[in-house]
Length: 285
Length: 267
Ligand SMILES: Nc1ncnc2c1ncn2[C@@H]1O[C@H](COP(=O)(O)OP(=O)(O)O)[C@@H](O)[C@H]1O
Ligand SMILES: [Mg+2]
Image (cartoon, rainbow over all chains, first blue to last red; front, side, top):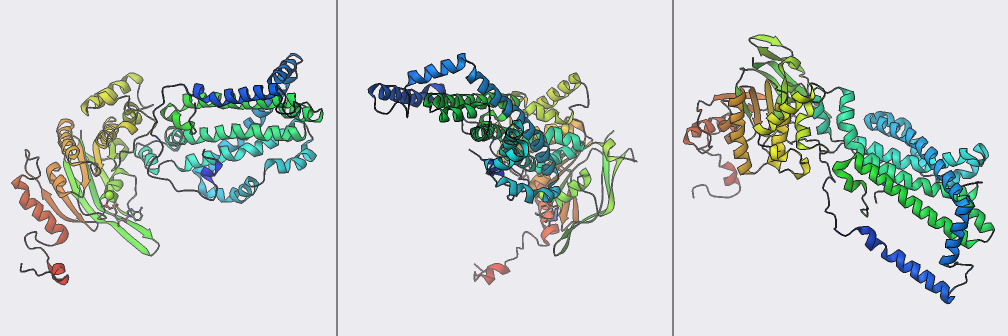
């Protein structure tokens, strides 16, 4: 997986002549979901049999039936849907705000590298501070309400989006831009027709990474201080010693994260069909 | 009407950390409308710089590049100058057809764009590949697409910078013929730059020999039908070009370095 380090601030590369990574890989015929279900099914089986045989204390790991029962109850009383909804809304707001900042800034500094000098020391400093380490301060400033959650998500997702956008724009082949000049395209046209499409796969990779990071950061924040959301539900269950509810929360997180990532992958592939395969570089569509 | 080119004392100096380099050194020359001129010279003699100056990608540090239609000066924009680079430089996210019509997009109506694109694809034998992406093209095909992208907007002047440089012998030979046919068919002004003497001779009706940014010789090639570089008519011309560049006669090779290396030249 190309982390945000695929484009570290210090390691800005000059425009390269060659484009890499446009080769498409052949897809295997069997749907990967089937073979991919092997381990979950085995784990489920092991979990179920182990619980049945009493191999472990049911308090440490409740049985599948207990978890399903808890999930059902939480759905009926509205706690689970409400938690999912409020977490999702925070992601939408926080990630949206992050993109609104990171995309234009990445494009701007990609096009005008000289202006980068103004920002890089600050950004480099911020990049190395884990957002959750800032949470105590953020709570002081913004309270435990929505403000601090948004800022945590923003801090966690800004860099993958910003750096991948920056990298995509900067890596645009200078030769292609010159083709635009030789065809008398204006600066705006060169951006719209050459630089942006060339940077799009990288931008989409950044967005996808950012989306993944936003869930992790948000749940961390909700575990520490919140009054709603999936993280809060887990935290609350912990203080009530409800391990079944904790497991429900974890399962919900994994499923939602996977689903939102998949949804994003679909969107990305529709937006950049010429190299959809490499938008998802870990390749388990 | 076709447009010609006139260079008046055109020079281009690049500033380097330790001094400067005169890539093109006060060139004056006229390319007639509809001519096929090749420029030949060794690497670094200023061929690419010369083409970039004509195409407007680079500004001369002295002198002027002018374009003439019926003896009257016209602006570069009105003349229509297209350039094909050494590398195809295709947009990897666009199909062959989309790459070819890249220059037309937004400049004429859909129907006309579609017509011109199809026409160009047919002319270059690319119809079968119209929906392929550049990554799936061979080098020769990619270079054809690049040529199509330039021809599609009907420039009066077509500049080509070693367009066959990266291609194999057979593809080069085929493309050479195609480009000659294209020139005959369109009647446009072609300027092709190459380091390959045979290529310069088989393509150009006039060969400009460039050495260290200056014109070393201008060699007319008065053979309409000769296309194979091993045609005997080329022998004296090839020798003349070689002499202009290296100052030596090909039949009296400089053997001093063999002797220095201890090889006896009398063998
Ligand atoms: N942008 C540039 N900056 C500095 N020197 C350059 C630049 N472009 C070309 N040169 C120099 O000018 C000379 C001619 O280059 P070029 O026109 O590319 O030669 P050719 O195409 O015949 O190989 C070379 O010595 C090259 O190093
Ligand atoms: Mg060159």
